[in-house]
Image (cartoon, rainbow, N blue to C red):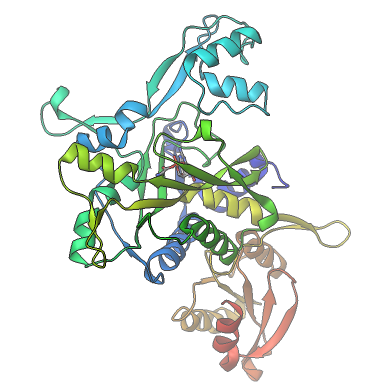
Length: 455
Ligand code: GAP
């Protein structure tokens, strides 16, 4: 990411991609609303993910499970026991922070994943790490902070009515494993994909939409027989890379990082993160985890339901193993926008902002532009016709140069200009966003040309 996060965020706010949440009331920390242009990209991104990982996959099916679940789900998944962060307070300035982040920010080469509270405390004391806000070295003891949001279900607000907002969509899939396998008569291997909101009371949210407390995930849980010799882990890492190429993320801007065994989550036997090189540092974009049989086994134990699978060939009962590719929609959107944002010098004293997003994802595929006010009616008619087959916008305000810049800035791949010659030759000018080259084409040939070039 060549440009600062601040520059990209300013652009996205002014152009209508993302707005601060509840802005007229002074906002709500780390809450963001996706504006008209942002939501178009998100819908396309989710559709592409669904098509790739669910509809067009020969193995997978989809699910949309509830956000609120029985509390035993979170006991079985380990979230009620393990899903917490190590927190400490600076006694001098009262700033609350994560102990692991305090260390990692001072020593970027250290990864504290898997350290217990004693290791964290000893390191902070031995190295005399100071509070980044006031410089004092005077901290409280570390205590664990529960990351799940809690609310009450029903009219009574007591211990028994407590429910949690799901911190991941994955558990909805695990508890439905038997339902899906039986009702669709699925044989291993098969996967279940889900897109939905998750909630975490993150202690250090930030970097715009990189880490928020309310976010959307796209998760696949892929179930297979552990006796199966196929390397499904590598298969899904490869599939994720193919998907990233399909949506146009530049491969030179991300790396694959294998987790050190000490930093693995409580459910994982192995994890590879695809980390994107954001301007604020390299950060997890997409995690691919080998969850083994942790979830189905644990849900079998807690629910006393048999979640095993009967192999029809061997008549053997097994607990399937799981590979999980999981990504946040907002985080992927941020990577895509950072990847495609460019400020280009054009001519001596001129420059343009251009979003070189894949045409599969841009809010609009085409902008129809009348060269003069006198041509508004004809151009608008063309816009209405093209709207039947393409995602179009119509722009009649400002000089033509400004209108091209406006469309470049929001990533529209093609501008179609209706001019005075169009009245007689029934042709228009098509301008390419990336090359800025223009060609003349008969209106009758437009749909075929655009369909071919927007693929
Ligand atoms: N089911 C496994 C799971 O949830 P995770 O690594 O905690 O694993 C998976 O999250 C992905 O969800 C991350 O790679 C990231 O893209 C996204 N994600 C997690 N926490 C997030 C947050 N607070 N804000 C935005 N995205 C988040």
